[in-house]
Image (cartoon, rainbow, N blue to C red; front, side, top):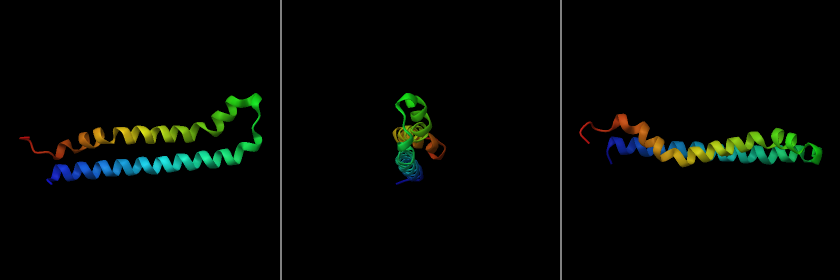
Length: 87
């Protein structure tokens, strides 16, 4: 394993680890937000309830999914300066 492959694999692992942490953070936020606000639910204000309770955790989960899916491309791109000029 050369320097380029090592750096690329470390970057890939780090990005995937950040995605897992974001998945856990978003999932726990979602569970705790719903547990905290379930008794205040009123069907007349469904949009406001969903936006104030569920929107932020879902955005965190979507960012985690995007990071997880693009980790390979991002690690290859960030490791390019460490490749040899001839290859």
